[in-house]
Image (cartoon, rainbow, N blue to C red; front, side, top):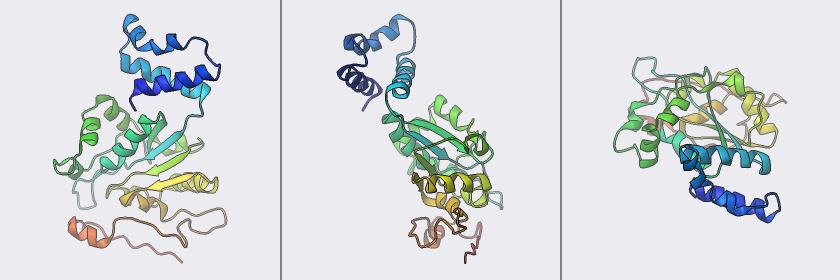
Length: 237
């Protein structure tokens, strides 16, 4: 669904429910944006935000990414780009309110391996070439800024780098624990699951206790030639 069609669908619902009187004036908003000199895409984005906030329960998504750019050996690593862009794109299409945050905030290194032609898909390439998206990514909020906010979903993006700054981050653990115990969605992909390993619930039990998880296994690390870059041993009761 395009941004314009999403706006049209939202306005139709508002009109049918009696919240607005003149549906036509809203359906012509695209043309009005050019008249008053605003870039149409930006104008639609602002109008959708207002409509979603005032009349619809806007879903809120927290995307947590890494700040680490190198292995201990010095080799470049970072966020695996597509593990952020795909969920970001899907949420944008649905009109979700998206926050990108990282343990320290600010710049988010991207694993150069995720930018190679064979793995850089069209969606990821478009976002990588988008100044707006890259600016947002490199000005990520830090986790303490968002730890008291309410989100419908908290998602941990992957990349080998997350194994350095996710597992022992106390603020990240607090966010996930509260999210889970509130009955709200917690999701992680690939190496992002490392952020779940040390999360404890209010009763002192580990969140992952007696649960089945998917993730990146040692065989895959061998294929990726990353097994010897770091060896992490997790000890749980």
